[in-house]
Length: 397
Ligand SMILES: *Cc1c(COP(=O)(O)O)cnc(C)c1O
Image (tube, rainbow, N blue to C red):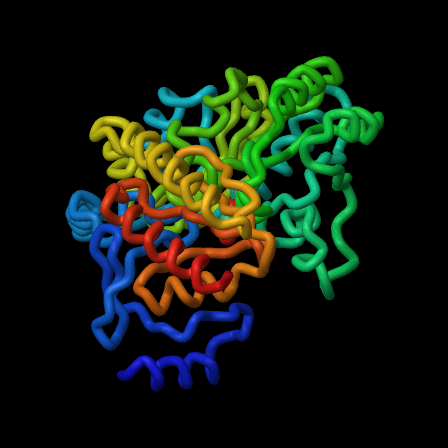
């Protein structure tokens, strides 16, 4: 099929929930994607921070294909080795003591919301069920997670929403303090907002939230669906701030593109989940857990997290160079390879211009270019994109 034929057919038979670029990708390797006509693109989107080890990673392909021939799925009525090994690796390398596996970020957050409510009930506070979340946040598209999300455009047309969420401005500790009521059980936020436009926490903000939650007996829950798995130059973003949450959610990059989510918690909190509290048919299958084990191995044993740190620094210094040349760039921000370029104009022409020149980039909130390449990206790839951006900003002046 030509790209044109695929696009025409897709627009006829696939639910129209996405506005897509008119390109059909057929294969990839590392940071490079190829479309149906054989054109190459350098991928600075990585499936939206999913393919952290790049496309068609050989180690994962081999491990998954071996596992595929051995055992794909049994029910969580039984134990399996890959799920057990993966949980142990996550626990050994995080604040958490226990892991619940599911299939997506929204599901991981649903699990976190349920656990928070149950935990406070078990602690003897049955009236505490409300969760404070942030403006500009993104937590998913299920009814509970879209209610938790602090963006009006995502909720439009779906009310009545669920009860139990109070949304306050991001980076405003006082607003959180004032929103706490005798019904509050938790505060949930992304340590760095991704979809919200790579919004970083103000200095002292997360530390202040940790103290506040401790003082008020609330749970602090980090949605690390986008920031986790090495993306910010640490395995988890909370490590940048010298504190730990009580609950953390992961998904996106955890299995490099196979669907998996995870909810991690400290023992005292995790024990609110008992047999029958929660479940997922596909959660943590041997197949997907095997992929995630390969991801952990690459991130921790093969130096990918350190590489991300180094490339992130290099990338940001290059973008700061662009900022000093082009007044349309208002801000360069982010950690590791979660980088935002805040523009004084709409970013869609730049995104389209990059695509014509063989670079995939993303734009959130209409004016913030977001760069979330595979963590294995190299300097030459970054140089190529920065040169392309330089030309596009030049032409748009
Ligand atoms: C992508 C994302 C989600 C939703 O993940 P899905 O797998 O699409 O359900 C939730 N939280 C954050 C921070 C995300 O970036």
